[in-house]
Image (cartoon, rainbow, N blue to C red):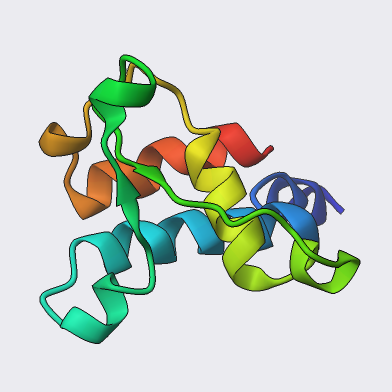
Length: 105
């Protein structure tokens, strides 16, 4: 029974896992050299919006409930809610992946 308890402490719920995957994918797409992928996410000028080093992403106004539930809308919403004090330029993929699970749980 102890093994089950220890295992369950390291497992994310479906919602937490989805948020973790969304943030991880946005980070990967923003750092992608493939133009078509990086063009999916439109960066806004952070200095004109708020003081943060993390790029904000453009989120079109939802026109329907289905759009609010879309992967892109939810991914951008979660990305834009990440802490302002994180320094995007200093994060590697592994350090980013280490920080995000603490936010989704």
